[in-house]
Length: 595
Image (cartoon, rainbow, N blue to C red; front, side, top):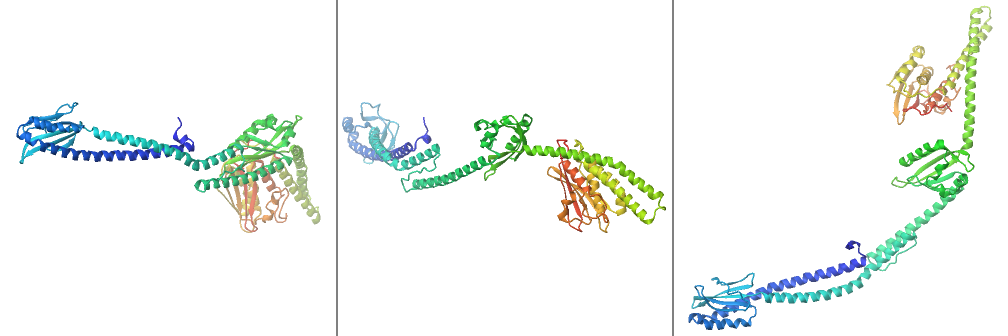
């Protein structure tokens, strides 16, 4: 059985009106019957009290002259009152003197010496003293049933029922007419909402049938539909614009639901794979990913879907002819005003030629690096011989050579030393990108001590003060870390003004990296050269003032980038400089050569 809440609005209105009418009539009828009952009881008390006094007065003579027959005749006149059950006269001593009883009577009620009227379970009981000359000569007892009262209740009940029936019929007829006034606008509104829900046609409008609150509701509903229709048309235009742009682009464009299910692919996908779009939707695209890439590809995509992080992945897709081509796939989450992801938009760009060029360039760089390493290594011995023999000539034949010859010989010795230094730096630079990435951490404090020990003479000569904070252990080769720290500290000692150098080394944690800093009070660097100084053979000062080959910072940059970090400088001329470099807090997963 349907509950009242689930009934149609028309039936609710009818039931409500009928129930309200019936409740009002029943309440009114109950009040009328109850009031009449109370009033009729009062009437009975007064009527029976008067009747009892009259009978009592008429039985004084029979009692006085001891004439029970005359008393019985007097009592017999009560037959005219059909609801009188018993009428009994008692002597003062309680002896029954005369009596009248109806056929269904169970006997005279016992005598009560106190005059009065009271209701009992059998009816109304009246006690009236019989007095003559101020002397009580007897007692009259009357018992009256309540049948007359119940007859009035039944009469009123029948009348109320008839009125209730007639009123209910009239209420039903009126409600059937009045409900249309309320239900019709609501029904029109329901039909309009159902039509919009089923067809998606926001041009539908509800018909306004009244000017009351329901009419106002219809107006607001139609205004809402107009707003939705306008936004829907604008959205359709944007979708068509997006589709046109996506179909016109050379990249492979796709969109996906928040759960990662691919729900749109442009025609470039069909042209590339040779399959219809419906076979690529969902996860159908995965069948074209290279077997070596699919596991990581799916894991990265699932991670982006779960976290909302952008997708950036290089992998290989199989073309319709069976050949695999490298693609760069990127996707970003589109969010609503509350930050909830509503869709993913991404693209896959063919980078096969670029990858081939990068591979060719990498091989060329490897060959060049190997050549530079071999050439530098092979040049060390001839250069060392030139330097050694030049020094021997200068020592043994110093007096046999004139001043100009000794000057030329000095140039030769100095040039040999500088060339040897340059070859050593080139070897350090080329070897910086070939070492394996470590899987254990290096003790940064111990590495710093070794670096300072190697620079002890330069520190002593310059009168420098080198301080440091506690440094964290890092995943970096000890030799490479010493190479970086030693180069940065040596530069701080070299590029100083007249004041003794002050150098401080520290490290702080930045997100997933450790950020080291080397701060000095030297001559500083013009900010316009802050990127240039990290290039090979890039020097800002002449050899006359500051020696060096211009490779030290390039070596630092190559080493730091080898470990996935970066290096930069912050400085102003005359205000010292601070060199920063970062090292990832976690060990790098690969051991490839430097690119």
